[in-house]
Every structure is written in C-alpha cells, then in structure tokens.
Image 1 (cartoon, rainbow, N blue to C red):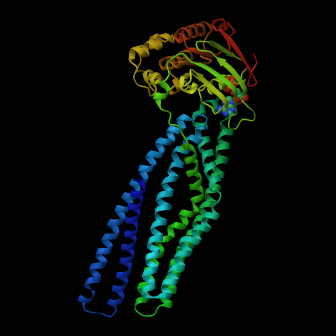
Image 2 (cartoon, protein in one colour; image 1 turned 45 degrees about the horizontal axis):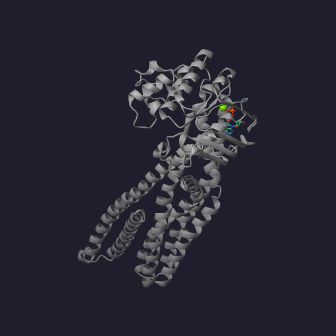
Image 3 (cartoon, rainbow, N blue to C red; image 1 turned 90 degrees about the horizontal axis):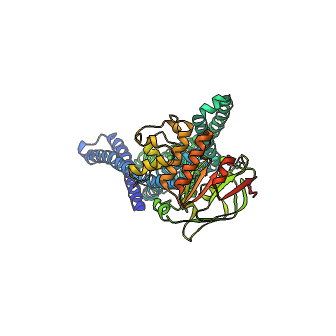
Length: 511
Ligand code: ADP
Ligand code: MG
C-alpha cells in the first residue's frame, strides 16, 4: 500500500517535470518562431500549449506534494508509534538519546523519502526520457545531455556523499546537545544549588560548538557540490547551443537546462545521506525486533510467582565495571526478602534487572512457567517519577479498569487515606506539592493499584521519619498479602518483618 502510494507520488512528480519541460520547450519554440513574425494563427497551438503546460505543471506539482507528503506522514506516524513502543520497552536509554531518536531521527526518514528516494526516481525517469527524445532530434545534443545528467545527477551526488562522511558523528553530536539540554532543564535546581551550572553550561556550549563545526563542514561540502551541480546544466545548454545548428538549437538548449534542473537537488540530498542513513539505521535498530509491550501481557499472570536468577550480570552502557555481577538468587513465591548493602552496591540494579528495566545477561526466570518476571514484577523503583498531573492520573498512569474505590483503597493501604477525596488535585512537577513522605506513599499506592504478583520496592521509606517509615513499611507488607516482595531498605529496624535478608556488596550477593 505504501509502495503504491509512493509510486503514485513519483508518477505525479514525473508528470510535473514533463509539463515543466514541455512548457520551456514550447515557449522557447514560440519565441524563436515569433522572431520571424509569422501570422498569429501559426502560433495559436503553441500559445495554447504554453498555457496548458503552465497550468498542468502547477496543478500536478501541487498534487504531487500532497501525495508525497501524505505517504511520508503515514510512514512517520507508524514509525513514531513503533519508536515510542520500543522506547517504552527499553528504559535503559539516555533520555537525550531517546528524545532525539523519536524526534530528529524519525524526521530523517522523511528526508530520505521526500528529498532523496522520490526525487532520484523522478530524475532517473525524466532524464532517460529526455535523452531519448534528444537523440531523435540531434545525436550530439542527446550525448551532451546524457553526460550532463550523469555528472550532475550521479557523479556529483556520489562526491557529495563521500565529502559528508562525518554524518554519523553529526547524529551523535546532535544527541549530545539534546542530552545537555535535557540535563540542564531537568537538573537546573540541583546544578544551581551546587554551583555546577557554569560547568554544565560550558559542556553544553562545547557540544554546541562541535555540532556547529560538523554542521558547517557538512553544509560547505553540500553547498560546493550542489553549486557545481547547478553549473552543469547551464554548461550543457551552452554546449548544445554551439553544437546544434538551426532553429532547434535554442529549444534543445533550454530544454536541456530544464531537464538538468531535475537532477540538481540530488547532489544536496546526497550530501546529507550519510547523516540521514545513520539516523535511519538508529531508528531501524530501535524498532526492529521489538516486542511490543502489550499491556495485556502484564496482566496475563496473577497467581503466586517465584523468581530465579542465575548468573545475572548487568553493565550499564557507559559503566566502567559490572553494576551486578554473576548473581544467583531464589525468590520463592510469597517470600518477603529485604535487600541491604552500601550505597552503589547494586541493590537498585538488582530490582531493575528482575523487572526487565535494564539489559541483563544470564537467566531471570519466573515460576510457574509462563510468568515472565518482567511481566509480573512491578513496584517503586529508584528512578520513580511523579507526574505533573492529578493524584488519580499518577495512580493510574495509562491503566484503565480501576474504580475510584480501588484507588482510594490503595491510598489507604499506602497510608495516604486523606488523599482519597483529593483524586483530582494536581501534585506539582515531580510531586513538588507533596511532602517527601506523601510522595513516597503515592508511589507505593501506584504500585499497589498495579498489584503485581512480584512487588519490588526500592527504599520505599526513604526520606521518612522513623515513625512514618515503620508505618509505611508495615502497611506495604500488609497490602502485599501473599505476594512475593523484595524491599531495598537501609533500616536495620525493618528487618524483623522479612523472611530473608540479602546483602549486596560490589554487585554481588554477599550473604
Ligand atoms: P544501589 O542501589 O545499591 O545504591 P545501584 O544499583 O543504583 O546501587 O548502582 C550500582 C552501580 O551501578 C553503581 O556503581 C552506580 O554508579 C552504577 N549505575 C547505576 N545506575 C547507572 C546508570 N544508569 N548508568 C551507569 N551506571 C549506573
Ligand atoms: Mg539504589
């Protein structure tokens, strides 16, 4: 279907170019004839033809733009949806990377189709037809046109491609700039408080300059090549005017000029191809082989689940060493496990690995068979985010099928019962209008609404005073019921409430 629409847009493009060439040809012929001052009747057909070609050219060009953009926007819509799905499934990406992948990289696909694939196809068809037509009238003119089209439409674009080889670097430089922007905008308060803003701005500026340098080089290469490409049709027109004798000369010369114009944009498009290709490859890598994270999948398993980890190792993309290293761990169904250990030991990573939030090697299996841990484990993670939205929206995220009564029950269970009649209140940017304790309890309530068979809580009582911490943990464990629960905690006092205490140190289970 997409291919058919593309072909249709291409066909319209060919017709529009043909009308343009016809316009130039008939207009030139008419001017040349008019110089002889023939009776007006002799020019009548030409006059009508010029009008017709002019109207057709504009009309068809408009239809071609419509058809081309229609097909490309359809492709982009599908691609964006798949990219978002893929990003949702893989949460281990840098956020700037993620942002630029769905925004600028997907746009590159538009560039590829509209500025490279379609024009190249149109130019090839129009070029071949024009050369054949020329050969009938004058062999030298046909050969000159063929040579000009090959140079401007093939050789110079290839040269442009070679000159713009830094395209891949360009895409990564752009991702760096986006990353800086995300860091600075999200972390502004922290950066200012710690006096680190000048350094962060310096880094951002350096990245900006690097991007500008790369873009400048690419643009220069593109400009030189496309400037040269523009000269070629003019040169061919001059040559034809010299080579061909008689009244056909001006017509052939100007038609050659018009036919040459069709291939001129290809050089500039080719100069951008390395960059576009890199972006398209990144989109493909992101989208290909993605299992769409179906919401139903997460709901598929509701019974008691045990989880087994064997040789599980996690290394973060820019990490110097394994954050989790060859971990074996058994979590029988219904077991309540506390995870303790120094900061940076890998506790949060362990929970993220069980929930499939980071890429891990080794085996992470759920029992009974079919209960995939990443589908059935949920809870409160270290990077949990409270959205600038209402309490209800923060509890539901995009889930449906929960009554307000169920939300209130979760709030009560999380020790936030007084929010039961405040479901429509906004909580502020990242829960800024909440106290630390309320924020933690809201996250806990969100996890309880989800009611995953394996409940993972990463420091759910962090930032609470001891009395509140005791209360939240007790309510969480009570609400967890018969489920498998893993809680990361720093509080020695909590440990009595658990069946087992696992100590993580240096990415390994220490006991
Ligand atoms: P804990 O929760 O025990 O404090 P973490 O699991 O958060 O420890 O971190 C374990 C190790 O992995 C630490 O060395 C930390 O610096 C590193 N780490 C954690 N998250 C990331 C990340 N997103 N990218 C790179 N390294 C990370
Ligand atoms: Mg942690």
